[in-house]
Length: 366
Image (cartoon, rainbow, N blue to C red; front, side):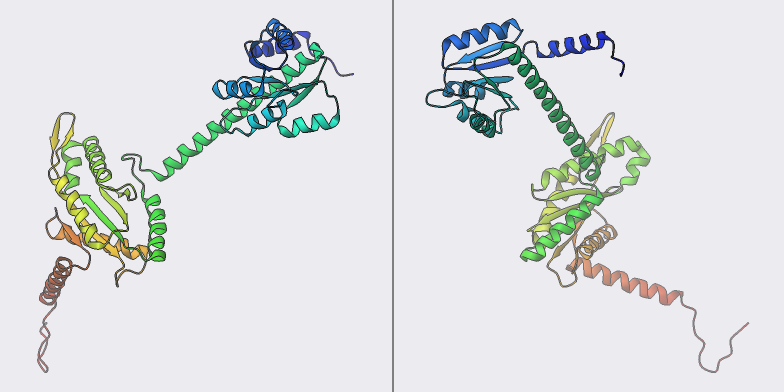
């Protein structure tokens, strides 16, 4: 025979259950006042708090206004039966889990099945055996505690998962989308634009001479400048736009439903705001400008989302080469003129560096 545990363990567990159940609020629903009074006296002697009503409509009002911990519900009542009260309580998704113990003089299997199918959690027959009632109350309240604990753990798990999801998609410094999440959203938004044949623009931008901020003031000030810069970008963007940190001091904005001209106008507005902004930090302040490259779809040179980003980045690079603090449109006049000038200069430099070729028949020295 297995050894029994020490009696003290049973007493301790019982006492813990009693402490948890003490103060539980029970709603008694019965159309006979005498029954209510008897039940109230017994329940309160066990340490429960009680509310009581004599019809189903009143019971539903009490449950909605102040949900009890348990409902002791008579089946046979005028107007709204206990069966219907149970059905409505269990169908109300805004309510917490409330155990329902049906009390009835009908001891038939059919009556019990009807009540259980309506949502009742347990049954007790009249005349009530109070020892049995006490046991059933304790059992239902224990189930309620377990249900609440399970729901709390589920809420905590959902919160943890949400925090992890947010961390995986967010840049830790600025709170904007990180590069990986930007690329995911870019793919989705570009495919959406192609499917609906809607325009889509991409803006690449970064702060001019940002390295000198870190070199002169330190990385903490540099971080503060980046946070203020990102706040301006977020403030200027629409709710449907995506704003993210692409890397270092470079940022990307995705503008769905935006034609290229409108993307350039947007970038110019942001550029002017940055130009007029004073970046403040503990112990000082500074000003900086920003450069922008803008590309858009549809465009004959842009067939996929990666070529859209590359086009915007090329335009940003040209903006830097042209002197910074400007907006350059991919494949626009300034963009193409600058590339032509640069290619011409590169060609001349290459010709000057190339060794001269002696005329035909002349001898090569040394």
